[in-house]
Length: 344
Figure 1 (spheres, one colour):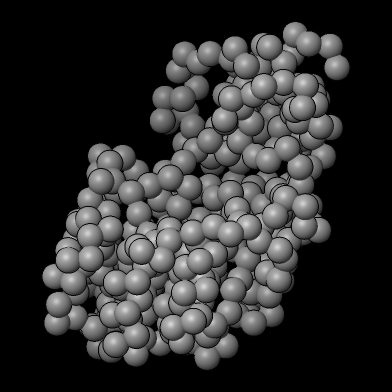
Figure 2 (cartoon, rainbow, N blue to C red):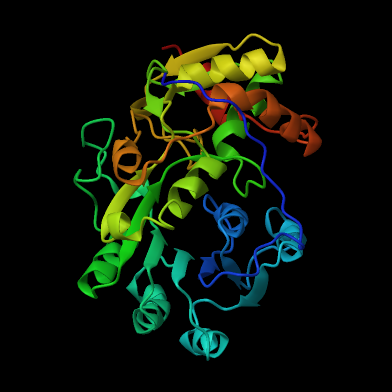
């Protein structure tokens, strides 16, 4: 594993914070949820800390009674403006942006050219200092060398087409490719809950292969801090793509061991060959092979470094797991039982 860092709790600024005298303003486009659902919340907090005015255009189909959206009142208390609308509707976007200009755009919504072009063309009119696009590390081909670098071969995905569209239109863009996010206000708990679900219930964790495969399991505050590091470094960041992941990689067996330490129970595992089974989607929260990214380029070009490691955060995460009522929830493990009852 990579170097270990300390856990840093999110900072909170009040509405009276002396941020009034500045010129830069950031527009955040936030999707309805999923693996990138909490990024907008943390982007807004960090951008306010950097002295920018912030406005969030929130996809109206988000479940506003779920985290992180239910906590948007905290952002409003910091002076963040939040509007809910259909982000896939060009007319709604045009109306929301009428008479507005922004120096920075953080697009955590677009998944294809159709859903990026309206705001991207407005950003070009504004002459934005940076158009930060939240892309995905999931576009890398499974066969590329590990850790994956930014120039590795990719699949043709909607996110890749957005990257190319921004480049072809001459925008001062920066694309970030996040991978496997956890942290406060998380909108998708699967990556770590899978392990807590089993180990806290004294169950064996079925791991594909021998469990030595590595992943980039990254804290959302580190993900957001890499993205917001473009502020003040726009020239260096312009027309660049960065992998967005932790500096410390962890194996699947390693996650089991960390969770076992947090729960106070032995982490029992059993390997299996995924090709021997017809498994439903989500049977295991990660890929069956090594799949992790190198953030070396962001460290070199943007001067970024991560502040969190899973080893430091797993105890905190377990408390959040219990507070969410997940430790007492009735769960079924039919797929696990099918795997575990088969001799390997």
